[in-house]
Image 1 (tube, rainbow, N blue to C red):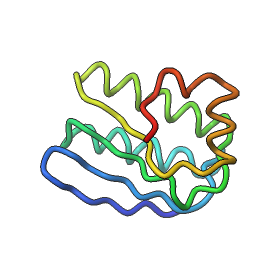
Image 2: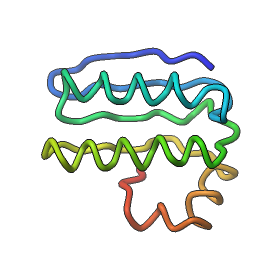
Image 3: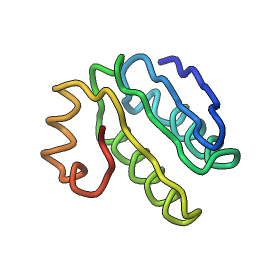
Image 4: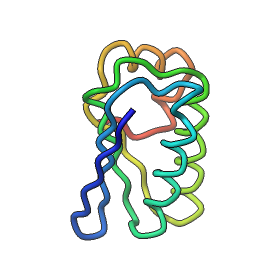
Length: 99
Protein backbone atom coordinates (compact mmCIF):
# COMPACT_ATOMS: atom_id res chain seq x y z
CA UNK A 1 0.00 0.00 0.00
CA UNK A 2 1.17 3.51 -0.77
CA UNK A 3 -0.19 6.77 0.60
CA UNK A 4 0.27 10.12 -1.13
CA UNK A 5 -0.47 13.26 0.88
CA UNK A 6 -1.64 16.61 -0.42
CA UNK A 7 -2.24 19.66 1.77
CA UNK A 8 -4.73 22.29 0.61
CA UNK A 9 -5.21 24.86 3.35
CA UNK A 10 -6.85 23.19 6.34
CA UNK A 11 -7.62 20.04 4.30
CA UNK A 12 -5.19 17.16 3.98
CA UNK A 13 -5.92 14.46 1.40
CA UNK A 14 -4.50 10.96 1.71
CA UNK A 15 -4.62 9.16 -1.63
CA UNK A 16 -4.42 5.48 -0.77
CA UNK A 17 -3.39 2.82 -3.26
CA UNK A 18 -3.65 -0.88 -2.50
CA UNK A 19 -5.39 -3.20 -0.08
CA UNK A 20 -6.21 -2.00 3.42
CA UNK A 21 -5.78 -5.14 5.50
CA UNK A 22 -4.04 -6.49 8.60
CA UNK A 23 -0.60 -5.92 7.09
CA UNK A 24 -1.18 -2.36 5.85
CA UNK A 25 -3.67 -0.90 8.33
CA UNK A 26 -0.98 0.20 10.84
CA UNK A 27 0.56 2.36 8.10
CA UNK A 28 -2.82 3.93 7.33
CA UNK A 29 -3.59 4.48 11.02
CA UNK A 30 -0.29 6.31 11.49
CA UNK A 31 -0.96 8.47 8.41
CA UNK A 32 -4.50 9.36 9.54
CA UNK A 33 -3.46 10.26 13.09
CA UNK A 34 -0.52 12.29 11.78
CA UNK A 35 -2.82 14.08 9.33
CA UNK A 36 -5.05 15.30 12.16
CA UNK A 37 -2.03 16.94 13.79
CA UNK A 38 -1.80 19.43 10.92
CA UNK A 39 -5.29 19.52 9.41
CA UNK A 40 -8.86 20.01 10.55
CA UNK A 41 -10.28 18.04 7.65
CA UNK A 42 -8.80 14.78 6.42
CA UNK A 43 -9.96 13.31 3.10
CA UNK A 44 -9.27 9.66 2.38
CA UNK A 45 -9.25 9.07 -1.37
CA UNK A 46 -10.19 5.42 -1.90
CA UNK A 47 -10.10 5.51 -5.72
CA UNK A 48 -7.35 2.86 -5.81
CA UNK A 49 -8.44 0.74 -2.84
CA UNK A 50 -9.89 -2.57 -4.05
CA UNK A 51 -10.32 -4.18 -0.62
CA UNK A 52 -10.73 -3.32 3.06
CA UNK A 53 -10.62 -5.79 5.96
CA UNK A 54 -11.87 -5.50 9.52
CA UNK A 55 -8.45 -4.11 10.48
CA UNK A 56 -8.96 -1.34 7.93
CA UNK A 57 -12.45 -0.66 9.27
CA UNK A 58 -10.93 -0.25 12.72
CA UNK A 59 -8.61 2.43 11.33
CA UNK A 60 -11.58 4.28 9.83
CA UNK A 61 -13.34 4.16 13.20
CA UNK A 62 -10.23 5.50 14.97
CA UNK A 63 -10.00 8.27 12.37
CA UNK A 64 -13.65 9.19 12.81
CA UNK A 65 -13.31 9.32 16.61
CA UNK A 66 -10.12 11.40 16.31
CA UNK A 67 -11.91 13.84 13.99
CA UNK A 68 -14.78 14.22 16.46
CA UNK A 69 -12.43 14.73 19.42
CA UNK A 70 -10.62 17.52 17.54
CA UNK A 71 -13.83 19.10 16.18
CA UNK A 72 -12.59 18.20 12.71
CA UNK A 73 -13.92 15.99 9.97
CA UNK A 74 -12.94 12.92 8.00
CA UNK A 75 -14.36 12.28 4.53
CA UNK A 76 -14.05 9.22 2.32
CA UNK A 77 -14.09 9.91 -1.42
CA UNK A 78 -14.05 7.81 -4.59
CA UNK A 79 -15.11 4.67 -2.73
CA UNK A 80 -15.43 1.72 -5.11
CA UNK A 81 -18.41 -0.60 -5.14
CA UNK A 82 -16.70 -3.46 -3.30
CA UNK A 83 -15.49 -1.28 -0.44
CA UNK A 84 -18.82 0.59 -0.36
CA UNK A 85 -20.64 -2.72 0.07
CA UNK A 86 -18.45 -3.53 3.08
CA UNK A 87 -19.08 -0.08 4.59
CA UNK A 88 -22.84 -0.49 4.03
CA UNK A 89 -22.88 -3.99 5.53
CA UNK A 90 -21.18 -2.96 8.78
CA UNK A 91 -23.17 0.26 9.09
CA UNK A 92 -20.28 2.70 8.58
CA UNK A 93 -22.18 4.44 5.77
CA UNK A 94 -24.51 5.97 8.35
CA UNK A 95 -21.77 7.28 10.67
CA UNK A 96 -19.14 8.43 8.16
CA UNK A 97 -19.17 11.07 5.47
CA UNK A 98 -18.77 9.34 2.11
CA UNK A 99 -18.74 11.46 -1.03
